[in-house]
Image (cartoon, rainbow over all chains, first blue to last red):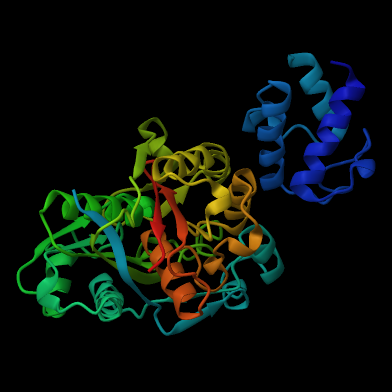
Length: 79
Length: 312
């Protein structure tokens, strides 16, 4: 899976869970500050990402993923 | 073998209204944060001298009246609760006596927030087995007795109240098979420790569990009742947190306008939340008689139970 594929899959997930338009989900976007996504939505996103990419993101690691690119990197590294 | 059905609902909320602004005066929180995070706008707290039995009796009386039955036709009273003042006597026998039900079977059931759906399952089984003609199932909780009011992670969520339903005989299956289960390996995620403990939970872990493990249970309950989520006219999950409710509904593909959101003006009343929601939706004319409603309850244990019921 390429980073671009992960990014666009992630953007779909974020749009469904948080309602953020997919084109606003840019690599540098910070979940809290730029996308207004709180920790509960992050859990939902992590679970959806596990379904989509087959990569588990445990709670302890989730809190260190601050930007969209952090999640893309994590999925890429662990898939 | 006879089928079973719900004959009527009843609910009770204590008088004292507690808003988010009221709580913001005693802990570091605010109305906007609570609404966004949990979905609650107001909830009710019982009086200091108001007991679980008092609330159970009030809800039970209304359900009995709605059912049209005489008290003497009730053979079993089940009170789902995890917040009683003391271990004995149980609430059920006292409530049965106060309601004028002559010497029915009576027991309390502790499956925490899953209690009401466990109770409906047990009641339906009892009627079908011939152990009871009619069963009064009550979910009644005084959660505030067990909450640390200085802990903003819990005092904004939990509240007091009771709801009840009467289960009786039917020619067809008006209550589907219960799908129940537990995850005792995660027992430590929601606890009240010792005789004077306060409720503590690993909120994030519980959120993750509720938003992943629960939808499949609800799907199985639909399957066993011979319906699909598309057939469901009302989805009434335990009112734990509006975000959890909406996440589960989304996973099941149930439209938001069919989803109970009683938590907004009731808070999380543990095993009372589902019957309280049902009784208020019935009062408001929001339930369609003769159609399938999906109930799913989940909570400490961790435990869960789900069934499809036909709206009376």
